[in-house]
Amino acid sequence: MNTANPQTIHRVMHEIKRRKLEVLRVVDLTPRMRRITVGGPELAGFISLGSDDHVKLFFPQTAEEQSALESVELSGGIKNKVMPPMRDYTPRRYDLDALELDLDFVLHGDGPASTWAAQAQPGQFLHIGGPRGSMIVPDIFDSYLLIGDETALPAIARRLEELPANRRALVVVEIENAQEQQPLNSAASVEVIWVHRDVPAEDLLSTVENLQVPAGELYTWVATESALSRKVRRILLDTHGLNDEFVKAVGYWRLDDSPQE
Image (tube, rainbow, N blue to C red; front, top):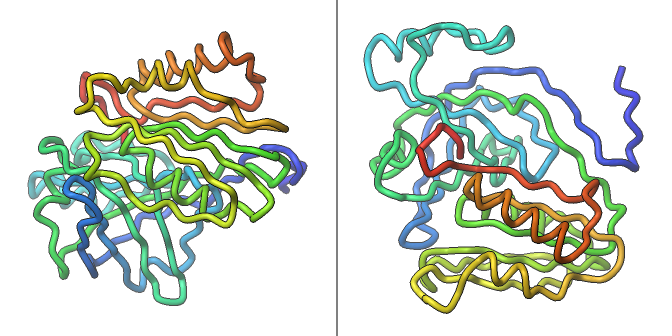
């Protein structure tokens, strides 16, 4: 039985299922961000309660990996040595009435996920697993500070869409250039700072260091390259004096191309 206090940050665990979903639509949001909508009968019962949840995507490269994927049971953990490459992605949107799931991919030119997304077409199939659990952040904060790069945009956009009108959010996103800016919709009062890599004067760490942190009870969420996320977290704690209990900083990818989102 789940006895977590719903008015505190808590985790809810889910039954893990492998699902084979069909590609329904492919839409380019920006030159480097592609939204792929998948769905079908196996999406029934899918659940994602947290805006930064992750599903595991599988990208078989060989017939042996494809065969292993078709028969694997995820509930006991992945133990098959011939399993295909896997990557974690945020469920950007899901609709159980339409049986649809949106996944946003950064087209960075290499890696199994980006390579698959670059060639994806309606009628193809994608295997997913999870999410294993959801981190629930209840509506107990006055303000939100959300910091990330392109890989964090799906979670940031989803968080903003879930905020009520009486909240404030300051968003800092590092992107390649101005063409990668996306609309971020929310009922809350939102300020967005875009940090462009092609502008030498703009830098994520210095931008964070010079922020005017939102007032009131604050929840902070950071997701970017692993080492960079750690540096951002230190600035938030040491320079801005934020409460460590309400600062979540994670690495969505690594420069050594480890299998993170």
